[in-house]
Image (cartoon, helix red, strand yellow):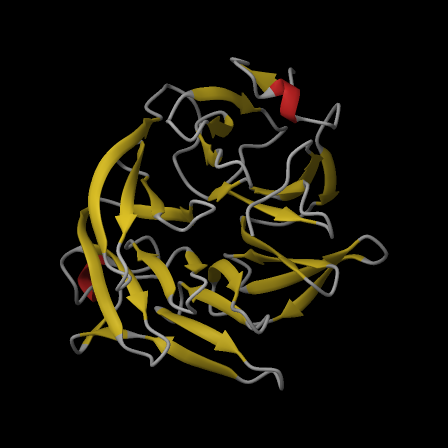
Amino acid sequence: MPLVSDDRGLGALVASTEAEKIASGLTFTEGPVWHPDGCLLFSDIPNNRIHKWTAADGAQVWREPSGNSNGLTLDHKAHLIACEHGNRRVSRTADDGAVTAIAERYEGKRLNSPNDVVVHSSGAIYFTDPPYGVQQNQRELDFQGVYRIAEDGGLTLLVDDFLKPNGLAFSPDEQRLYVDDTDRHHIRVFDVQADGTLTGGRLFADMNVRADGGADGMKVDADGRVYCTGPGGCWCFAADGTHLGTLVLPEVPANVAWGDDDRSTLYFTARTSVYRLRMRVRGSA
């Protein structure tokens, strides 16, 4: 199995010769995030757990139950921000371990099932809210949105015309926000305004091919390339949307994160396992 398929420049960015499996025996892994303490946190959604992986100890249960957490990230104080499918909320974990909901309802109605999340340098939190984790007869919102949580806790709906909004990532200068739509098999890019709202929403990349997997987790490197897990692997796009190739792993990845002290390793949550791959580029801060 080639490590890179349809190579149009991606191969030159990869330092590893193969993807290294670092954890296995899981059910459906998601939401990887590298913690400055030198560990990877990731979700195992059906098993209702968050795992902590270190090179010394491997993967161990870090939190159970997790609210069937999916996407994870860190705020500027390294507090864990989690999208909890089961609890239909976004939560923050304090230094003492206390978990607090920071978004549960929009205009009095319960969210669908928050999926993925990113933090802006302003401290604002952006997340997607598809209905993957909620039964149709339990839904209170009739749309699937992208939201912003302000530093004061205010919740704003930014976009509501997605079918299944999923992964999202800022460009290195934070002037653009990429959001993929799993059902439409594409990535859109929005312009981020000074007040944190979004405009535009033009098509950035089409990922509609016949292969296992759908547009899902996303990250950006320091040079502005976009990495999106999707059909057949993790797709890489130049900042102008040109497809540079696809990273092919033993299992179809659902999400991806930059890690290690130099932020030059890609960590992939891929169905029942977690993999890592050394790169010759750095992840965006």
